[in-house]
Length: 295
Image (cartoon, rainbow, N blue to C red; front, side, top):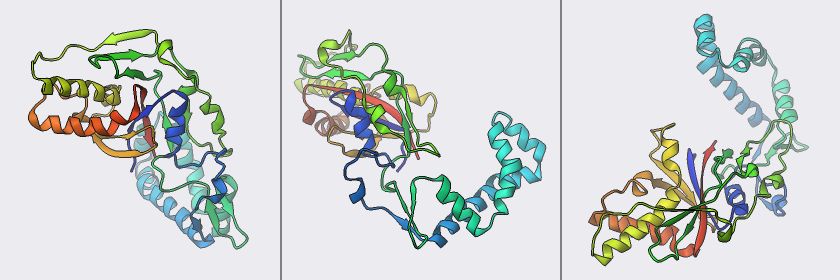
């Protein structure tokens, strides 16, 4: 399942990419178990059939519209010159290619495909993974201290880490060396420069209410900077969470984090459940990141 937003819980910055790589569709080059991983194999005929299917889909969605009204189409995609050039010049030639030309072109240009003697190909990626590319925001993330007396202290790391700003997108003609992305800087609690106290919550003498408020504050750490992404995509109603054990948690509703302004009885159970699931097992400190992830 593709998620626009993924929150990553990590003990340090260096492990953020490692946790994401567990669910990245491409296997890391340095993975010592790469040769033992099961791959999907397609016959030569299946490779050609799938390629033709994509050509037919592109023809139906884009090229047919271009032929119907070229001027309108050019106006609509005037800021995409590369795309327009493909539609006008390259795609018509693609439609004329023979089966042999289609097959050879795919195997030659897609290094994720490994050709066998019988003409079948195996994939270097795991189709059960969650996303094909992702990018991290410009901030280093938020470091949370949950052992302080009221758990209402949020500590933000200061500055930027350029290594964590790279977008992980496989290139067409080269294998990506993932090791360079794993050289992030580990930030210990004593390295943190800035401390921000969260705003006080509604006063209440109930210990149960206070406990719930503390847990809610902790959950906002997972929520991270999610609100900042909503101004770009208000249709996003859920996001995924990757916990330090590498597990992927689907469909975490955004309204259960951060947006809870008034804690009612029903919400207490939600907060208890998610606190026990995402906060308690992972110790005193952890860092949260929010990133884009796409197929």
